[in-house]
Length: 146
Ligand SMILES: [Zn+2]
Image (cartoon, rainbow, N blue to C red; front, top):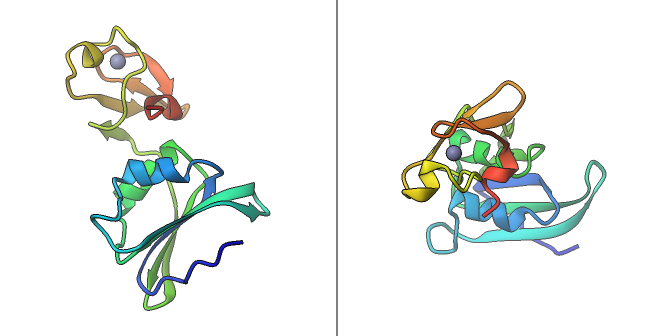
């Protein structure tokens, strides 16, 4: 396994579904440009998942609202906030109740795709999202496929 230096201060996103780490970084809008060092470790052996990806972001405490977006891609991910070399907060990711301006409606005839207008999705009880405009329902991963 690759050796990645432990973080002194920052955010670790662990238990990401194998192969989805890059998508997680995209989702969070994280690049080398706007934060400190970022490590993406792929295909790490995991008891729980067999294989997983891990993202480590140095120097940024990613907010709960932000990290909950990870649930759209990899619902079993876990978040560790590291302060002064110690885990100061552990949390799970939870599907956001409302997605405002995030994702793309998979219905090609939806007004949001025709007019490139702002999209909005509301979480349903069965963990699907319904498009605020065309009212069709989709699972989370379908919304963030592209
Ligand atoms: Zn729609």
